[in-house]
Length: 114
Image (cartoon, rainbow, N blue to C red; front, side, top):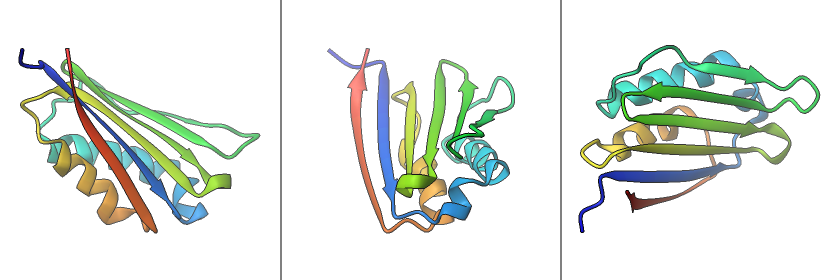
C-alpha cells in the first residue's frame, strides 16, 4: 500500500531566544518554506504570540496540507510539523528553517501517512 501523505516532524534545539520570539521572522519562514517545498498556500500564516510565556505558535494552511510551528524560547526550541501529499519535497521546506535559525541541533523524522 502506498501512502498518500507524508508527515515530517523536526525539533530545533539551542535556537537563540531572539529568533524564537520574532513572530515576523517565523511567519516569513512559513511562507518561504511553503514556496521551497512546492506547496500552494490558501491564505496567510496565522501567528499567535503568547504574552505570558513568550511562546509563538503559527500555522500555514496549504492545499491538502499544513505547516505548523511552535517556538519555545524558555527551552530554546522550535517544533516544526508538516503534513502534505507525499509528492512534495519536505526536505526543501525543512532546509529553509535550518538555514535561517541558528540551531545547535536539528532532529527530524518523516513518515508515511494515509
